[in-house]
Image 1 (cartoon, rainbow, N blue to C red):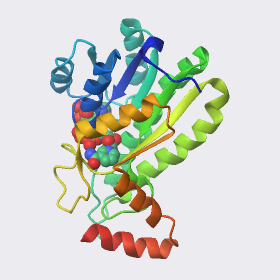
Image 2 (cartoon, rainbow, N blue to C red):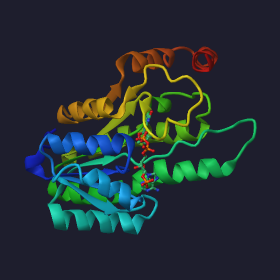
Image 3 (cartoon, protein in one colour):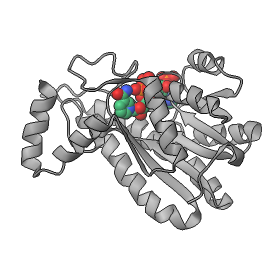
Image 4 (cartoon, protein in one colour):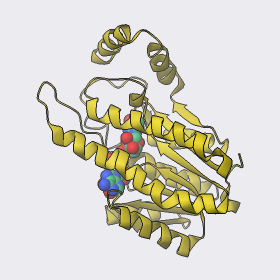
Length: 253
Ligand SMILES: NC(=O)c1ccc[n+]([C@@H]2O[C@H](COP(=O)([O-])OP(=O)(O)OC[C@H]3O[C@@H](n4cnc5c(N)ncnc54)[C@H](OP(=O)(O)O)[C@@H]3O)[C@@H](O)[C@H]2O)c1
């Protein structure tokens, strides 16, 4: 599969007004990419874009499918073909069980899953027609298996893995590469609210370097930090009942 470089077009990163998306925008701009960033908060996007001549902001809510299609069209008019799309916009709403709130699930799936689908709906036909392109879905190690407070978040991220793996198989003949990113804990506004222990937490710049390195190698699965990711993957190889017991204990420490 052809590796996308700045010579093939620009990169579009959703959810880049803060955290991992903002750091990735700066990292890819440093690596020579023309970077389009989108999110809802216009002033935060402007601040990210002000860091580098090569970053351009587009206000867009991922839950609005028509607006996502229009944003892709606006980006391509301004910067040329999108060679790399990073579907990063996401929210983490902790589930406070036993109090069950269905709206937490609705909101989480709306942004993390349907928002990603809206990006794919806009990008896939264009890339298939061009016979090349790379779309990366920012999932999470929380998508490997259930974790405390993650009933809604983890389910949305597991869905991204399943969807992305399926699409990677189906799109291979068309020349479009689909990859998935599974970060462990990264220090961002999203995790600053967490009151539970966050083992092996890294900063957003480090996460951005790891993602950019993986994208540049066309890796299908980019996961970090390695120790945490391997630990969770090993736990996930255990019988499920054992996994639930051990993962629950590990995260509650
Ligand atoms: N931090 C971690 O430990 C960690 C670990 C694994 C995976 N992740 C994933 O990494 C991604 C980035 O998270 P982060 O930690 O960097 O959090 P963050 O700083 O809160 O960033 C989330 C981004 O998503 C955008 N967003 C949220 N709802 C949106 C919507 N409806 N439309 C458009 N943009 C929207 C936000 O922008 P606006 O509010 O301006 O719209 C913001 O730019 C998420 O998918 C998250 O699940 C994070």
